[in-house]
Amino acid sequence: MIFNLPNILTIFRLLLVPALPPVYFAVENGRYVALGIFLLAGFTDVLDGYIARKRNIITDFGKLADPLADKLIQITLIICLCVDGFVPLWLTLCFLVKELVLVCGACNLVRLNEVVVHSKWSGKIATAAFYAAACVSMLFPQSPQALRIGLFVLAFLLTFLAFIDYYKWYRQIKHPSSKN
Figure (cartoon, rainbow, N blue to C red):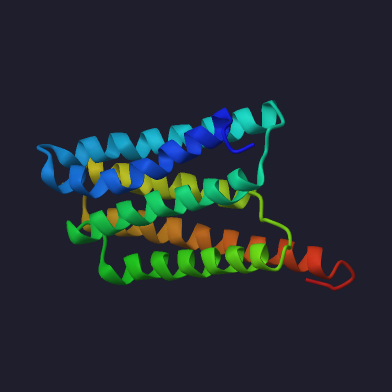
């Protein structure tokens, strides 16, 4: 059933994505309002996952839409930060390429009727690092650029390590007898 509380929260989070750029750029103090939207998206992500597991209402829709919503809100925010000069283009492109690879991989798994990747702790840590980097950049715009870039580089490296962790997990599922 698609209409349960976790899925409704995920749909809400998807609806926040297109609201982020206009708020960021067009509203007075938009950076702070956009940060509120971003943090609300993060809170609903945690909440929908908790409710889905607690009530055992995990759905195929949620398995796909939940990580998609997370990726879209993060991509949207990093593009806003790039346009605003807080994150360099090269780093933004690194995040975009990595997310594109993950989304294409997940879509391919679904197309092949194979397992849908569930969240792992490495991915949660990488997401937390991204949120921390975004919060520092948006709350403290006068902080040294090297600090902001360093935090996003750390988030990217943690994300890359999570990607490797997911890849190893997938290989183990596909080829249980093979060595990683």
